[in-house]
Image (cartoon, rainbow, N blue to C red; front, side):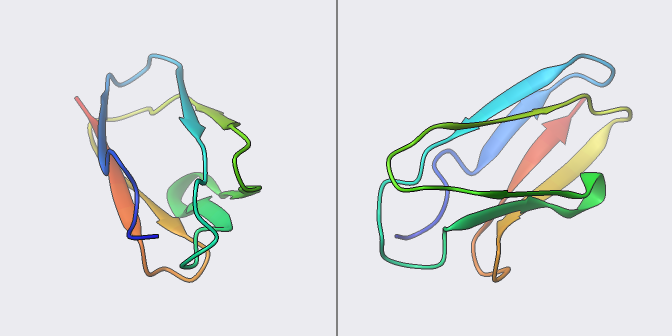
Length: 78
């Protein structure tokens, strides 16, 4: 209901990454997860893990957010 936990994840450039998101509350706007820089948008059903696979190509920070852009977090790529 108050955002992502953890809100920051670390990864290495060029290495495949699988993130698992599980929405545990009906409160707030967490029904959708978006990673805009990778054109990823997924529904997050309540209490069901959803895997997101991606391979970050360069160092930097990739932002992830809810569908309404209110909650956010980051994948910090080294």
